[in-house]
Amino acid sequence: MCYLLIGNISALISDECTEPLVDAFLRVYLPDGRHPIGAHPKRENFNGPCQLTAGQVEAKRDRLLAETRLDEKGNFTLTWEQLHLFTEPLELDICLRHMPEQADIRGMESHYHLSTTVPHWKRSGQQYVAAYAYILPVESWRQIRANYGTWVIAGTVRRLHAREGQAQLKVEAYNAGNHRLLGCARTDENGRYQLRFSRKQLAGRLMLVGDRRNLSGPDIYFKVYRDKQLLWEEEVQVADMPERKGVRPCSMINITMRDTLKKASGYVPGWLSNWAVPGRKSSLVSH
Image (cartoon, rainbow, N blue to C red; front, side, top):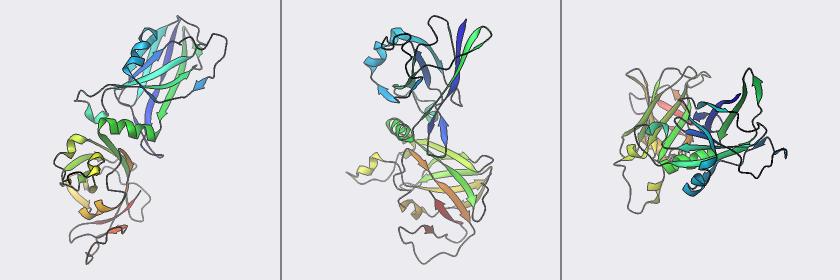
């Protein structure tokens, strides 16, 4: 007999969407002896994610039961031989080495404890099978991304007065400080996009000496394309809106495109509408 544990690990970008923990490692540890057999601990004890020190990881190395790498969707499959009773609680941790957009970079290694749990095992042929899923809260994921110097922006692209999202469009985000492209993404069949970039893309950003905002994200504006055709472009001044200044590592920005407007006589910071110059599109932005 053996055990088969399957599941998924992901993180909240906002209350509306998630992203998988691509290439993270899931580790399962045997109990540390604080839960005697027969004591029936809580089946689910989600007391994480809690960051672990290198010493804490080393201290539990002898209790490591199995580990695996999450795939591009955050899914995993773990198996091990029957060595202990399936009523024992298991400790589940993750190990991160980079964010999805840093796959070609050897980053720092960080470890987090997710939960101590007794999976709900079901016998299937010659093995016990259980499922496990965990979603990191947005506050935790935002801090983890900040530690790695990365950002993810998610949202939906729509046209004014249209409920449906606009599919198969390319969304580009630009740094208002130097007008450099930060990252791009394509909308899915529902008009949703997820755009990622790292601190590497912020090179050359204009900053004042002593400006503490150099620790925050960039001020951004967007362009939207269909194939190579520019459909809509924001005024750079939109980056002065509170929702666009120093964007957080996990941000939600929904974009509404609308018909071309005549250029206004000037821009008033803080207005929710931005006006288009001749030949451009104007937009409303919702957050």
